[in-house]
Length: 236
Image (spheres, rainbow, N blue to C red):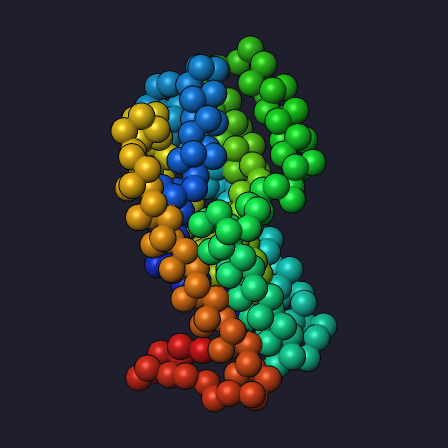
């Protein structure tokens, strides 16, 4: 079965790096500050928190890949791949516009989920225990914070129809966010709007290119256009 995902692990890593500057440093910067105030300050604790967050992404990516695999198992493969590719293209295009502020962010549609996350976060932060284990659990909870970029990666993971590939894509995305989020406390004070705008455009261009690739792959799956290849690499 051909995979229809637009995101290779390298593309997911790039998206994590660009997206964390353009979007996540503002959204998750507050979480970083909150963790610091709750006692997650030592390097080992900060590393454990990030490891917990990336672990959640990886597990969700594996689950999404398994769900995609189950979908393709019960549907006609060609038609299912075409549908998944076009749905992913639409989601990527929406995310590109949301990054530039042209449409509401995806997180706005998950407001109820955000409130549930906040309630659980307050209970977890109020726990008296400290240390690496608590930081890891906080990080895993952090990974459940509603985020449009994470949702994009999970849709791409589902499109792979492979739990392993889905997990690798989500893992690569999480690793890509590490440098910026670990420096969030510094970046929040020093990152100018001009520099953030450059990354906003860069991440939106990447999303549009991936959306175009997925559109062509979806049409090719239905036989409406020919598959594109560059040497031995399938472009769509």
